[in-house]
Length: 124
Image 1 (cartoon, one colour):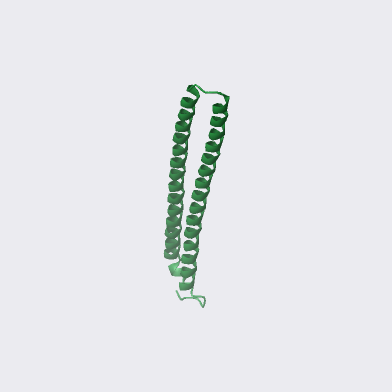
Image 2 (image 1 turned 120 degrees about the horizontal axis):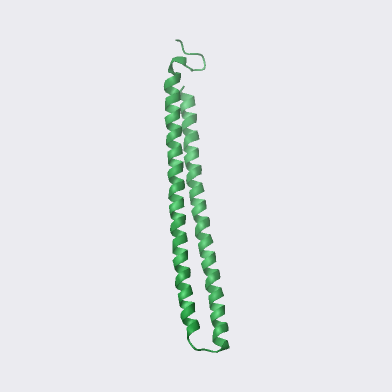
């Protein structure tokens, strides 16, 4: 069969579709791998946060067990609130950074896919 003016060759269509399918499957695999890695990192952040909270709770319990007056309890309360806020901000900052990094990776993969499709379209 002859190639049309547009460069489209109907005889090559099954091969081109197979190449396109493989490229899309590879892009999906890369995206899934990125999301799995992100989920693993999020799990690690959460586990670290739980361990930090448990250690903080242990320190507070030990401090509460020591004799002291109302002034010491007020000081402990202030320290506890400060540490909790610091931990909260650190946790959400790390989660936001991870989300931003993951989103950037996914956009990069999608852009590479679009660029590859555009190159393939031009070569046909």
